[in-house]
Length: 98
Image 1 (cartoon, helix red, strand yellow):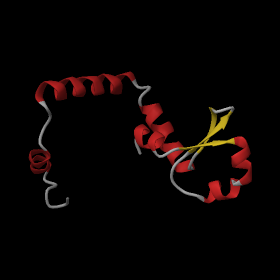
Image 2 (cartoon, helix red, strand yellow; image 1 turned 135 degrees about the vertical axis):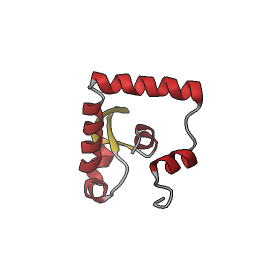
Image 3 (cartoon, rainbow, N blue to C red; image 1 turned 90 degrees about the vertical axis):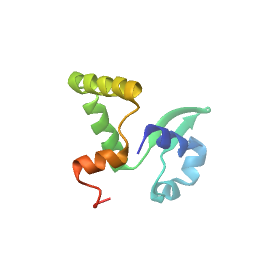
C-alpha cells in the first residue's frame, strides 16, 4: 500500500456520522476512515495490518544508511533512466517465475 493509495481511497467522516454507522465502518475492510471534528481530520480508523506496515516503513526510514542508499538510487535512476525489467529478470534469473 502506498501513501497515495491510502489517501486516495480514504473516507472522511464526521463524529456524528461515525456514531450512527460505527459497526458498519468497523466491519468494512479496506480503505481507512479519517474522523473529522468540525470538518478537520482528527483521528484515523484503519486496518491493523496496514498500520503495522506503515510503522515498519517509518522505522526503516529512520535508518540514515538506508536513506543514503535511497538517495543514491534515485540519483542514479534520474541519470540513467533505470534498468528495463526484462534485463533485470534475466540477470536475476527470475523470468520463468514471473
